[in-house]
Image 1 (cartoon, rainbow, N blue to C red):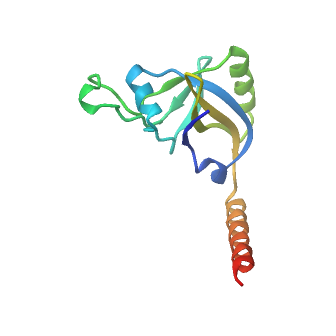
Image 2 (image 1 turned 60 degrees about the horizontal axis):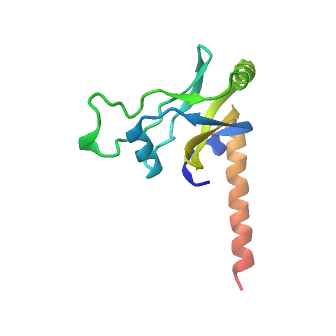
Length: 148
């Protein structure tokens, strides 16, 4: 399993409650671009509309700019491939106040490209500050142990 991209802001901004695995419906040249690692998950999110899950604002630049089809949008909506039961479950859980779906990472699984989406709750500002303080304390301790 090779990880192609990660959403590094997600664990800092959200508490991840559950994760799901989904396939992504991509065009041929998008698959090539993603396999090279040219995908950006910053600012993207997942929405469920009409019984289907969609990945919005994912930036996949063209693999070869001159061979890209006319009218190609790098940030177009892409359908996620999930089972109907999983989609119904996600609809019920996202209906709860404060829960959202965010993509965590894109990876390969065999010949397929998959995305891990997380059911998440946004962290409060004081939780983020607390996490920053903990990280700084861990660094100070590590430095103190390394010094002779």
